[in-house]
Length: 356
Ligand SMILES: [Zn+2]
Ligand SMILES: [Zn+2]
Image 1: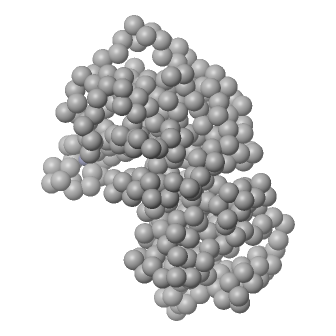
Image 2 (image 1 turned 45 degrees about the vertical axis):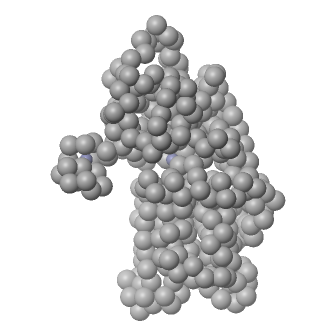
Image 3 (image 1 turned 60 degrees about the vertical axis):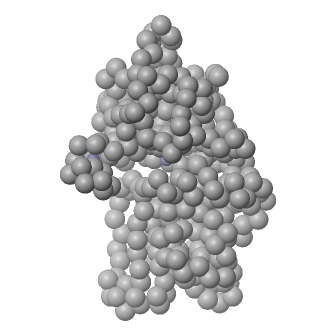
């Protein structure tokens, strides 16, 4: 028997720190750290519908503690007990028509997002996780730190957004505007720069922009207190009188989408990746989209190839200090403080760390 500590979200969106004596059986991951994601905060704001009670947490890195049924796990690497692995949040059901035909599953399950708690631990806000059938694990490359490994899934999501944004038209100095200087926004901007773009990142939180600029040499615009007209002017000024060709929305607000429409122009492309939660509706002009050949595309998921690409990019560019975006680390017992820091945007990435 072993003691498991976990954070349970009840039907009233209240957390309870719990401890239970458990017997380890099947495939079990001992979590090293789990990041708090913007999605978790939207859940706490009741903006995303999820089953209850539930253990949240889907950005997870851990050690394989038990591997009784290795055939049930999907991995590019041969895995053994003791390996440090990144857990892909999504895993296929194995039953639907798409799964049967080898296509992309339409009934994917997500750790920490759509598996209610009923005795098994299926979220990263738990010291131990019962790995479900078809779980996908990526072995942490030897040269990579645990903090960097924890960010692989986030980086993969941003790679997906960039693939959509550039649509294989990589060209030097493409004008790219990113809204939101959280982890997703900063990472998306870093990657767009790697793709050769001229990138400007906007946010209203000065300390985030400072990090973006100091750590990653990104060009920034603080839009706090500025009118829509001044924001548009500031963006055009940065791009030497031109509008951006690509706008990537990573802020998760309607305001950012509205501002994006103010700077879209002929044949430009808008990628929406921040509005995972339904925070409302906006007015838009279909005629403007039609007359200007505007492309609008959303993205909310990472695909296995993006995970591999993320690890490759981190390997090719070890000097990029993605891990510096982790500004706060807490034990699970300090969850109130951790959630508070994450909610009030006092940090960039807030994570829970567990005892090894
Ligand atoms: Zn996430
Ligand atoms: Zn399926």
